Length: 106
Image 1 (cartoon, rainbow, N blue to C red):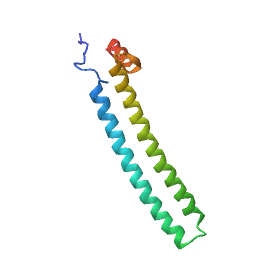
Image 2: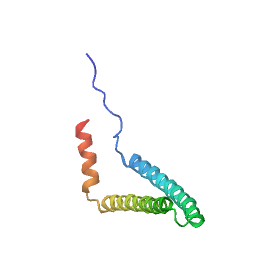
Image 3: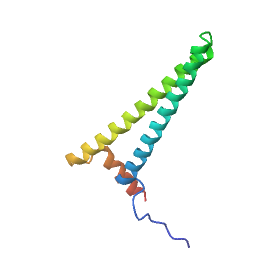
Image 4: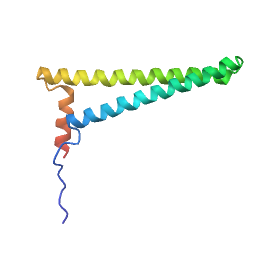
């Protein structure tokens, strides 16, 4: 008869969440850098040929992507600040209730 596997540590502990957030912020920073680089490329194409509508549209899309990546970074930082504020208050809050729910499942 197979035994039930019990996790030694929670799959959603605070340290792991912070690592995932750091990786997401790093990825977002890289995405922003690449989007701005692509924007400069399409900007050069538009400077060479002002009638190139496709390059203009792609240039705008690159700016949207750069802004979205910046917005995502701000959202992640906001969530981390809220998580720290809830921990500092001593109030269990939603973050800890998620941990409690995961512990009851395992």
